[in-house]
Image (cartoon, one colour):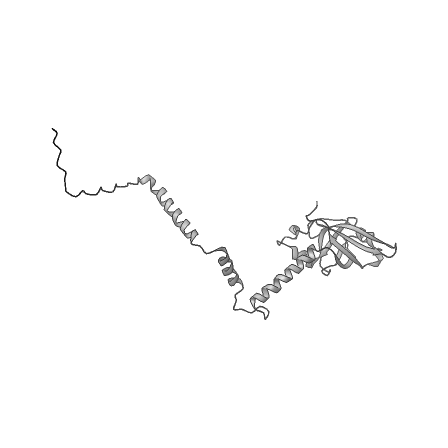
Length: 208
C-alpha cells in the first residue's frame, strides 16, 4: 500500500523573470531599432499634407495682407483665371494676329536657322508663359509645329504653311507670329511687310 506525500499548503512563490542580457556587440543594433521606432512614431504623428500646404500658403501669402487691394481668395481666383487664359492661348484651336518676317539666325531655342527654313518665332508673352526654367532652350514650345493660314488676295486663294517654333518674338503681341522670309513668301508678297494671319498648333510634342 503506497503512501502519498502530504500536499504542501504553503503559498507558491512566482517564478523570477528571466534576465535579458544584450551583448555589447549588439548595442548598435538596439540603438538603431529604437531610432527606427521613434522615427516611425514621429512620421505617424505628422500633420496631413493638406495642413502642410495650407501652412506654406499662409507663409507665402498671409491672409491678413491685401493683394492689389483684394482679399487673398479673390486675388488667387483672378491669378488662376489669368493662368488658364494663357494656357488657352497656348493650346487653343486657332488664333488671329499679325504676320511679319525677320532675318533668321540663332534663336531662343538654341537652334540656328536660315531664311529658307520654315520656322517661326512666337510672341514673348506665349513663349514666357510656357517656360519652366531659366534656360530658354528648354522651353516646351521649342520644336512644336503650328500651321499659319491666310487668304492671299493676289492669287485669290487660301494658303497655308507648317512652321516649327525656334525663337521668341519680343516685338510681337500675344497672337502675332514672326516667320522666316521664305515662310512669309508662302503666305503673302514680301513687300506687304505685315499682314493678318490665322494660326493653330499642330503637334502635341516637340519635333526634331
